[in-house]
Image (cartoon, rainbow, N blue to C red):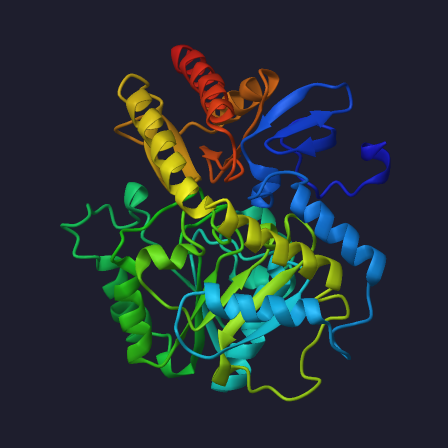
Length: 424
């Protein structure tokens, strides 16, 4: 049916037909159960069908499904906006815009930045993923297939190297490199062909998601922000994957001690319901009435779910839990790395962890086929885990995954890694 009726543009990792989900377990049409190690593409941070989320959705659905927040007011959306001003980085006044997805949140940020600054250009990082709509796709620099045959995209978007220290584009080593990748932006871009006074904003993922769960050095973004501030360029954080407690903090930008001018999030914000949130310094959202809006953005059911998600994260202390569990996962993977030559790098924050596989540790040749084989074998044994980048296994279970399920899932992944490593 899917082959006959559904667009072939969807990329399926394996033939899993999900029928239901509860907590950290998903069940397929045949009754097989799987430990969810990808959280429904990092949307289910509080687990599947959390009772408090379900209850909030049911109560709101019985009261009001929709009346367009674009033209009128909802209490649920206002309450959520107030909470977002409190949990996002930065002790300054903020304003909120609601859309339906991460891509829409990015699109809104692009327009806010251009409207306020009156500057026509944007910057983004090589390896970053920001969505597939034409504006957000223009920022995306993750995989050729995402951009192929869609040109021309939005003009005046410049991509610069990201601090991927495992695969440094300059073949240098941190910290001896002196973070040359930041100096390179000024020396080779701003001083050669990209007028910095014409750049509205730099879009960044604190931890690159689709690019391979790439974690930069902790002082990297401080250096980047200092450079952007020098030229009056806004910093826009794409926290669609890394937000809502995934890394052990509300937002991953906090790990790098920066306060973005604009922050975008989605995915886990409403436990998988369609909601995108753009949070900006109050003075930046000075666009006029009617200049941007979304009929379904700020839907009351989605906002009710989001309010419940935030309450759950606070009540269950999931930020501390994600940090603790993440350290446990990292330790196990690093210990496995000692005897598993295929594991080239282990990196992450909280429960956003990447295990990059290589065919040879010296050459760092990506083990793409092997990563896919580990993924498939793990799924067949009961763990729904997926890849990112060229050959990275991403480990991102719900933040409230019980310890015994976390251990069982890791046992299965380790077993698959060891088996494929022997065949390499």
